Length: 271
Image (cartoon, rainbow, N blue to C red):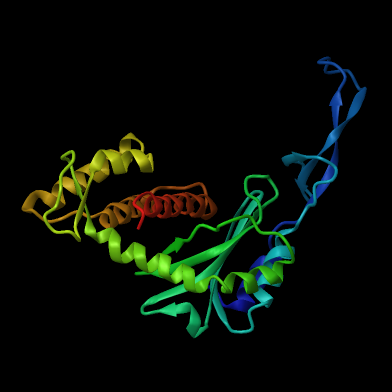
């Protein structure tokens, strides 16, 4: 279901605050040595806690999560439905404005904004799409800077291109059938074949996930049913959703990586 705009604001305001602190290093390994030397770098720590999430140079600009998310949310005048995930020094806001322009059939387009104070992610704003109760992120073309509120407005300009890119993926991926055979050619010019191993290697599935997808593929194709590139991605998506993650933020980042590979694959195939 997600949260409305006011609920998202409240959740954003509850996100931790961070600060830069001086870093000192003991002058020796002697545990009784009290002399310390101040370092050039500074530590990013959560206010009220002593754990350092990152070490940065003095000119590093620390941006609080609410300084990014709140202006972006407030730049949308319409109501929104969204989600907020965070863990440690990372947070992501995913939201879907109630705007007709952001709908295409049963699909709804939205935006996802990500930031971190642990240097694991720069400020990122990109499109996402809700399709059959699953959420796909569409990779951004370049890093974004400038005022947070302007990021949303600038992104809407690319909506037409994003819709076409997504339409290409969902319409053409089903026409790429997966096979164990090498160099298999279809007599139908609209149908193409991809070797299972080639797709698995590009997705870097890992041994366990590769085995599960293979077992599913063999089960589906047992009665001559087709297993398409779209089916392949959806199975991997399902397997990721079933994994136990340390937090929702960890799951969100794993799914984001899969979505990036999905669109990279569409470029490889020159769709």
